[in-house]
Image (tube, rainbow, N blue to C red):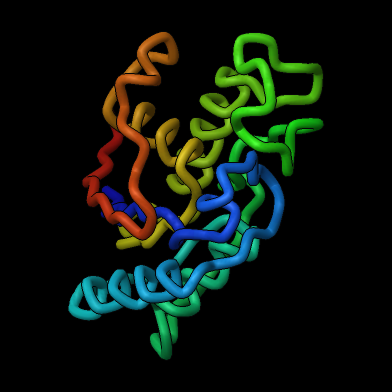
Amino acid sequence: MITLYLARHGQTVENLSRIFQGHLPGTLTEEGKKQAMELGEYLRDIALDAVVSSDLQRVVDTVQLAVGSRQLPWQQTTLLREIDWGPWTGLSVGSVDLSNPPSGVETRQMMYDRAGAFLDYLWQHYDGKRVLVVAHGQINRCLEARITGVPLEELRTVPLMKNAELHRYELTRE
């Protein structure tokens, strides 16, 4: 069994600007820093064995603020990066035709598969552990879909997590 605490990074300047962040580093706003600290307060009395997170700066900053001085093993992985918006990265959400993404934009299938690969990785390295996983809205949606058995075709029925929101799952092998 794995006890998984899944969180999203704090609010960023790019969130407020409504741009496709994708693989951009991202900069936490003052509110985002506050959210990360509040996440840390919530986590304070929760026993954790490890942290696994995206390697993008907005998540790294969130983890540092939330985990604080706790001495936990911390692994960063590209498997937890946000959707790769390719040529749309940095553009305003309202400036593109969402029904016609260009070549280079990661598809929902690709993200769903990446979420599955991450869960396999988690089982290989963290079986029996209590793990804090911190990532991004779209990849977290895919992780939650995989965990709860929601098929790709129904992915949009899984709500996007709010900034610094935390969900808890007990993962068991079936």
